Image (cartoon, rainbow, N blue to C red; front, side, top):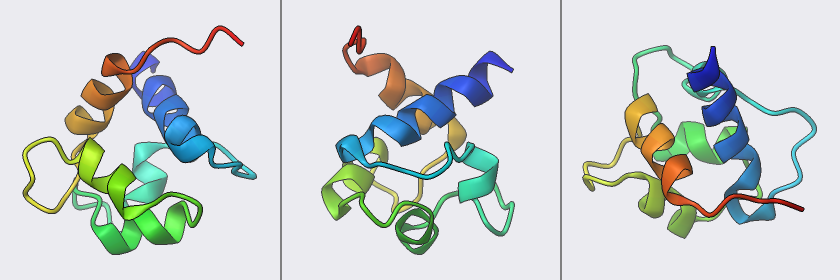
Length: 81
């Protein structure tokens, strides 16, 4: 459960995107294959940029895994605002 909340929080923080809802990794991974493609990413978070995707795709394979999303979140400074 903590992992889902963390991933959801990471998705909310990307580019300061104001999302109506906080999508979970599973919600962004539209076809449930365990990978978020650039298309899925853009459709789920239209305010995010290509640079956001590249920053999260740590191994540069063109897809984001839940582990990459979690690692990205953990690498970001805490928002104490």
